Image 1 (cartoon, rainbow, N blue to C red):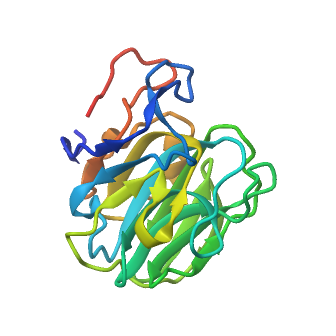
Image 2: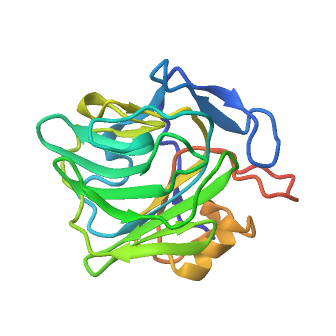
Length: 231
């Protein structure tokens, strides 16, 4: 009974199919930062003007990450309106994943770091989730809370796309990483829902009710499930 909107396909700018977190060939996308790979999701990817919501993705950073305009590295999610704003950026606080922590930059021009995670990511697959509302924002890594803070709402401009695998334009940040199961909701997920996603007990399309999953990437495969929920 998931309330999901499908068919919001992105425009590919270079990434190639890769093995996902469960070793399924072609289940994820691999991005080469040196080649400036990214995926473009027009209309803001469900985050245009958002005052509350949630973001979920699986990511594996691999090797040295390229710096962006503004002191972070290996950005895997962003919206960049040159001369206007920089919103919803997920990146790292250093170039080496073996010492780096996840950074959430919510909204601004450019968005300042709002939350910096506590744990080092290394080169393994991780589940990253962010929730945001007028009251508070929170960053999760592998289902555990990394930090919380209050931030500004996202800017509204439907001409600015969501970028996956990069912070494009003046952000000038491109990740060398693999991405899988990127999803956006129009309301925050609860902590237990995020924990279920991280444990692969649920997929983004499982959550119904008031949430609307704007599901962009990945096959929704569970560790022990044969059926594919493909966008």
